[in-house]
Image (tube, rainbow, N blue to C red; front, side, top):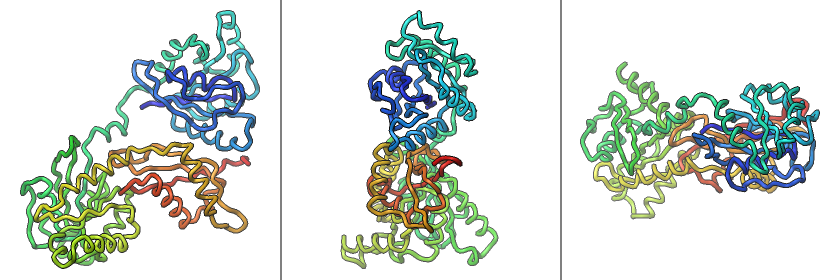
Length: 451
C-alpha cells in the first residue's frame, strides 16, 4: 500500500489533518505543541484506492526535550518510507523561518511534496496562501482540517502525485506461492517426506544415498494456501563428492535454499545432528531464511526411547547442537508411516501468521528501554550504546515468511557488540516470539552535528 507522510513544525494541525483523512479520531489534537510523539499510521479510504497515512511529531524547536530526539527520528523514518510528503503549514500564522528550513530539508528527500496550507477556515482567509509561494512548491492546497474545507481537493491532489500503480515487488511476492525447500544431507528422507505430504509417490525413494539429482518443484495446497515444495539433492561436504554430477546437484540444492521462503531442515532422529547438518544449518542462517527442523524417522527412534521423555530428549539435543537456530520449531514425524506429518503444516501456518505480526512502535520503544535499563550495554572505552528510537520497518525480503526487521536509531552503531545484539534479539523474541523466523536489527547512528 502506498504511504503518505504528514510532516511539519509543531502545532500546525498535522494530527487534525491525520484524523480527517483517517475518518476517525486517532491522533490527539491539542493546542499545546509537541503532543504527538509516536509515529501513528492509519488507512485513508476517501480516495479511489486506499493509501496509508503517517502522522509524525512536530519537527523544529523542542517543546518536550525528553522526547525531541525520538520525535525527530520517527519523522525521519516516516519520510524515508513515504511515497508522497505532505508539508503542513499554518495559514493564519504565516510563513516562518522554521517552515523555510523544513522545506529545504524535505527537498533533499527527492520525494513528491504537496504543500498543505492549513487553518484556511473561511473564504476570507484564501489570500493568506500567497505568503507561502516563496517556499517554492508548485503543488499546494488550502484546507481546514478542523472543518473539512478543501479536503476533497486535497485527496485529488494526493492521487495525482502518487506514483503509477505498478505492481510492487512486495505485491508480486504475496501473489506467488510460497517456496519451501526440503533440505538435508543424503538419505535422511527428503523425498519420502515430499511423498508423504503429497500422499503420492511423486519422487523416487531409495535407500541409496544421492538418488535425487536435481531440485524438483511440486505444487501443493494446504488450508487454502498455495505452496511449491522443492525436493532437493542430499547435501554432502564438497570434499566427499563422488562425481561432477553430484557437485552440480549440491550446487542446485544450495541455490534452491537461497531462493526459498522457508526451509525444512531434515534430521535423522536415529542418528541425531551431524557435522553436515550443522554446515547446512549455517547456510540457512547466513541466507536469513525461515526454518523448521524436521526430526524424521521418529518411528524408529521411538522404539529405542520411552515415549514423551524420549521426544523431549531428542528435541533438546537438536536445539543444543543447532543452538544458533534455537528459535526454530522442531517437529518429530515419520515420513515412512505418515505419523505426525499433518503437524508439519500446522507449524508452517503458525510461522506464516507470525510473519504478519507488527510490533507497535510505542510499545517497542518502552520495552527495549526497560530491557536496556535492567541490563545496560557494555562500555566500549568511555562510551556506551544509547537507544534513541526503535521501529519495525518493512522487510527487505518481502514474502509470506518475511523475517521481521527493526531499525534502531542509536548514538553510534559501533558501540553495539555482538553479544548485546543477541541479547536484544532474545528479548524481542520473548515478547513477540516469531517462531522459526530470524530477527534482523539494522542500526542507524546520529547524523553529523546532532547532539
